[in-house]
Length: 288
Image 1: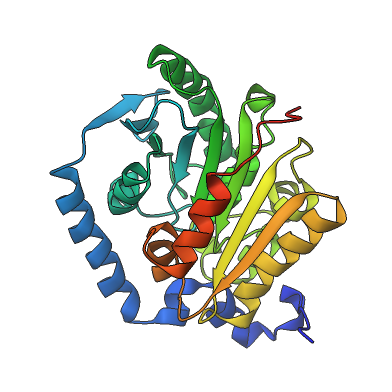
Image 2 (image 1 turned 45 degrees about the vertical axis):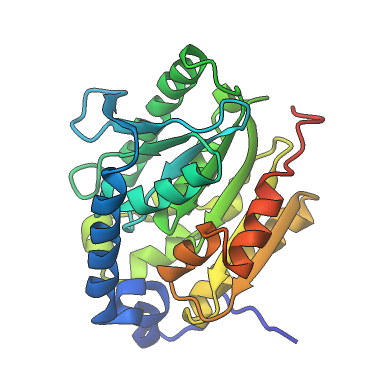
């Protein structure tokens, strides 16, 4: 029997290793991210990408567009970095994987903490949706969308799903190794940059603000991640399941916080085959 622990159950001395993936992986993090950057640079040589389309006034309010099959729903991709680091460009190797499987991808940047608060970050990101929807109509693509986010991007995907502009346009959400309880962030070093207040953390916690539209959810986390971090995905699964949502949870063998994304989006892996079977069979019926 698997026992889920809340983040409060971990002693303060263990919170950092449980809820800060860079600490959990130590020196491996830099080499993994360097590999993503190298692979993304190679991917950009062959991908037909329209880059840095503005959706707001901030320098980082931009998205890239990569055309897939016009009959498939488009993916809105949100990078991780604990709301304080990284850039959409590091995800281009994953954009390539999605495009190879026929999906149009909107790879979205957003302002980062501490320059902006997390509340302002989320508000800025919401501004992208109207521009993306308009752009998608202009390109005569399938008008439906799927939100895909990794790490902090998974949290942001669930935040965007609350926007009424996506009503009847959003099919599902893919949450890859996400952080869904903002309260724990106030207890670790990440908050030096994110600067969450108690009130803000409560307001932006996904577990207390679930999308109420008729969506399908795909949650995945790596088996090699810390137990506390895995429990974030298990907690989200439980919360959605109790609300009667159509939700799948995958714990991917031999996967850490980063190579989980590689395995899920690679159609040649067992995890990838499961994922693409799910995403290619999302139902268009009963959208509300």
